[in-house]
Amino acid sequence: LDKYIYGAQGVLLVYDITNYQSFENLEDWYTVVKKVSEESETQPLVALVGNKIDLEHMRTIKPEKHLRFCQENGFSSHFVSAKTGDSVFLCFQKVAAEIVGIKLNKAEIEQSQRIVRAEIVKYPEEDNQHTSSAQSRICSVQ
Image (cartoon, rainbow, N blue to C red):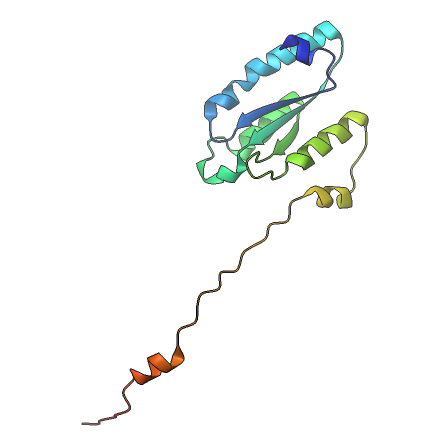
């Protein structure tokens, strides 16, 4: 692992938002990054990436905990879904831009965001002739 990190300009620490242990392991991973960075005398940009946002209903790591960890360690913060591809490109685009010192404008960010399309379910219409014949036309008052 040291050889992959040595001299890197960016490191993405990715964890599963539905698996608490994967978040707990981040401390160990970051310790390795700091150790290698000191040896190589380069300080890479570190991004914290919460994966599996498509499983929001199974989340075990609250966004506040994620953001607090980022603030405490000076990481950039990202949430993605590798399964659906949601925000993956945007995450890499933001990290790369930050490494080279480019500020993305709103149009560039919006261009990378996925458009969510809601499908409209069209149910078959009932036959009106069939339902009208079942109705009674007799009125009785007592």
